[in-house]
Image (cartoon, rainbow, N blue to C red; front, side, top):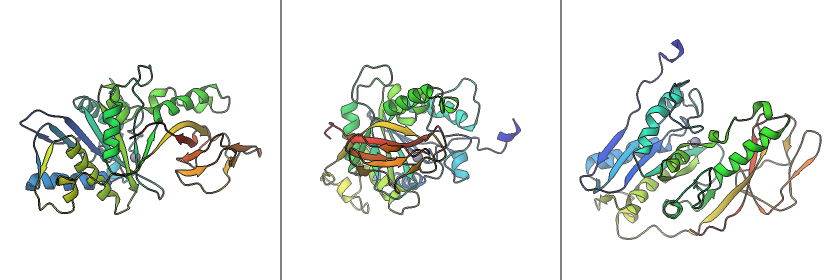
Length: 335
Ligand SMILES: [Zn+2]
């Protein structure tokens, strides 16, 4: 147990309790410690609230600028493991992230809406991840798809991605059945449960906003605007007129409507051999055509896209048994 003695011992939470009832919103930054756009944005929002540039009129606003303090301190994605996987409050914590989960999960459960702010490794445009359509299935039953879609549509980015947990669970199932990867397979679909999935499992809703590349100076701007637009959408705030650069948010005018592209993840392809390789350098959301060769297996077999769509989260450095890339097709959802 000595290894944890120099680890952070608290989670710092900023909470504003409106004197009028209203929505209960929680915003997270740095669930992955090297994704600091949300941290910067939340510090700026806290300053605006404290200076009176922004006023909470109703409801409950909880801001967690650094959700994984160990990872944040090391400027790393993870502390001892990925906090955004298998997020459950454990009875007996096994690692640092388990201890965070034990306080974070009840906090999420006490709210109705979650905005989780992230950034990503390679260059690309910001995007929003949403959950499933309303359904009464066993994997991720849900009844707030409309409210969640409205939130996704209000944030700013034009690109919206759905289908994460279902596709992840499908990948787990296939890994279990595969002789090469079975030994390394994630043990259950619960591994796909991160902050937003946990929120939905508790009866709330929420989205993950990927604000841009790590270190992109625009990413904190995207994150900050998204927080302000969420507060405005939920009718929780008033803003001083002189508040800089947020005139469009604070005033009567809604953000300029953007035509959204909604992609549905539907398949995940694992790396099966160290020699598996892509046919070219793919960026996330590069379009692919049915029949297009995306890569080759070690023995030379081509890996082909079966549909017109997009390649998502390609990882040329994937280990055997890990996700190599995802495939998405156009969703029938209209935002
Ligand atoms: Zn992240």
